[in-house]
Image 1 (cartoon, rainbow, N blue to C red):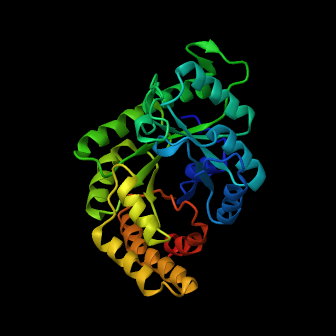
Image 2 (cartoon, rainbow, N blue to C red):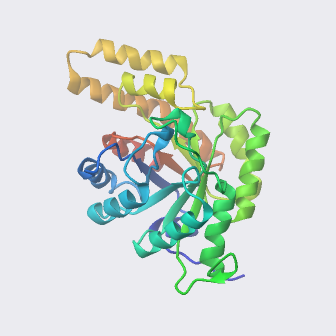
Image 3 (cartoon, rainbow, N blue to C red):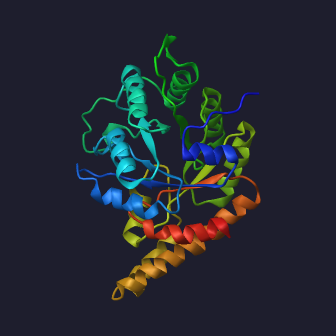
Length: 310
């Protein structure tokens, strides 16, 4: 069997079988990326790479390909370009993949993307020329065969492709089959949606273990009650447990006059919630890494590293 080719630091860690930690960066509705670059610099000592989101919830933000390149160059942190099939047809996507190579981007996450009706430009027409599995297949053809639709690329891209999965799906069997389709298409790793129910996560991870693909569990440490409530209310397919919301609300109330202490207590509460969660999944050999979606919360990474190394 030929040795698998590696094109990025993320690819290297996966190939070596290391436990991977990735982060997430969410550019906003601004052309000034200085704040996001600063967040990237703060998380860089802890993560191998960070995703750069592509207009999540259908809300218009700076172009993710451009943002990925700028953030990676300015911060020194390797990035994972999130690419949704919502907005661009196959021809455009293929051109963007070649553009990513030209810009020094070597990781892409294939996503369907939230429908435009959810966002701030609901009149936009979605494309969906491909789906997340066929986008994986397109990347594999371009990288492994050096072609598009059988037509040769003079200098083909060198890029790793991952995809997403949702452990919260009901029925979970359908989502497991979707992961299998992505694996068959050539997906190299899976980052999951945020999940809080340990039993559902175990069922899901055991179900997809047959595909022998690296799995990074999505987690969302919440830096405030407002963040926790907003995540529960507005992110599709995710419910924050009521007892967690209640605890975060009590922290807000109990420490409202001492903001510095309030931050410390929020950080500790996240540690206490995620430590047994991640430790149990690692002990069952169901995880290859963690994808931390702690957007605008880089100070949590030292505690997260304590969990992963503990």
